[in-house]
Length: 132
Length: 132
DNA sequence: GAGGGCAGTTACCACCTGGATACCACTGAA
DNA sequence: TTCAGTGGTATCCAGGTGGTAACTGCCCTC
Image 1 (cartoon, chains in turn yellow, purple, brown, cyan):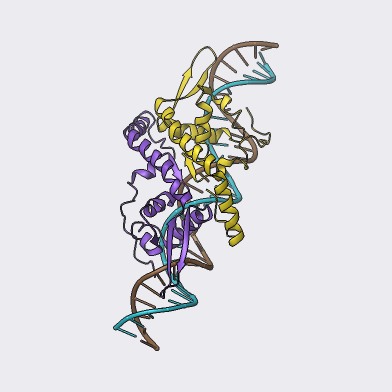
Image 2 (cartoon, protein in one colour):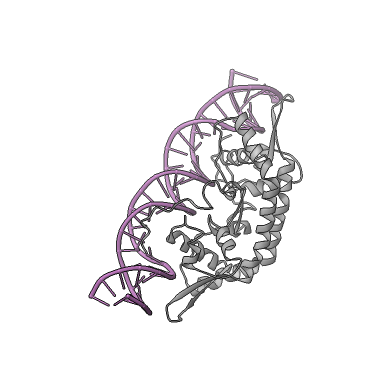
């Protein structure tokens, strides 16, 4: 698999709300990976479909981090073509609750957050402190 | 105020659990600042007491970010010596809920997390993927 | 009028994260 | 024998984040 084609913007591009939120779960991609796995195990290349913007190196990094923390399991099936499956562990599944609470907060306060940033920008323009 | 004295380790040093957690609220210090403000307004230098490891530059950065997002308010009192007070806004106070959920998750699964890291380290030593 | 506290700011720098690009080993099918 | 697919590694690099050190302007007190 060569990765020469420029990765096109996708559903998680810069406009994705999550990029603005004052929460982070693990590294940059961890939360999205967990969301991708919440409905069942997926293979490496299946994860790359919704997460087109992630290069394999970075996806591997994230998955290793989640595996290290016991949130995700990695199983190699040797049936006849090798196949690697990633799945949420019970611990990983239990993280969906705090994530859901964070999502609910974001949904409930999204407009306030945007208004706050906008009016801050009006009061002190150009002070765009770094994003979260 | 010169900052020549090496900042001593304090209650939030490298051993602080929060450094290991798969959550982040805002930037590195945001969650601690919000915790420091949850019982009432504090002044800049009062925040520096529990957060001894934060230099004034970084504390200012964090506070500006929280202010921009409407989570923290900054009020200058001109009574006769200038005084600046930081306080949680209602929006900031509402973030305590997702934070508490995250803390509860951490408390409930702390041992599992440590065990997972330890056994991962045993299975593949030296692969210490970066922390969260 | 010197010094000290308050609330920062400025300049500079090291490290970490994430991304781009390229390459690799294995398998099975054509 | 070549080709495509799977599941990655290896290198290199830019930008972001946080840290050190030093300096500032203002007011108050000694």
